[in-house]
Amino acid sequence: MSLLGLLARMFHLLGDTASKKNKATHQIIVLQINNGHANYNYGPAGRAIGLNLLNSPETVANYPVVSFKTALWFWMTPQSPKPSCHDVITGTWRPSAADTATY
Image (cartoon, rainbow, N blue to C red):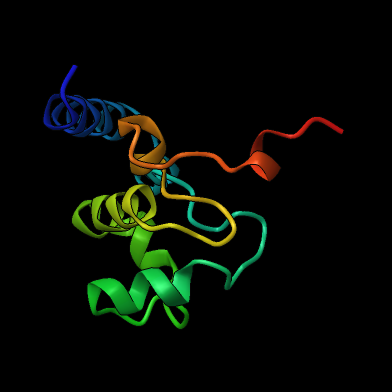
């Protein structure tokens, strides 16, 4: 399935789920940008898409367009020392010897 097809399917599923469940269901996040640390990704993601997500992180959960923008930001943006998900999947990133070492 193409990335656009996947996104279309996700929008469809979000709409179906939100219409059938209670209000809490509306707070589905496409990709979790929290990563266990409240401010770790909200600042950089917000700057990238032009929003202050540090002061209003609920915006990601409450607005599907913002949710998908942050999801795409997370997919495309390397977060040192990790490469971007996109680069790994497309084969652009090549692991170093240290990346493949076994301990």
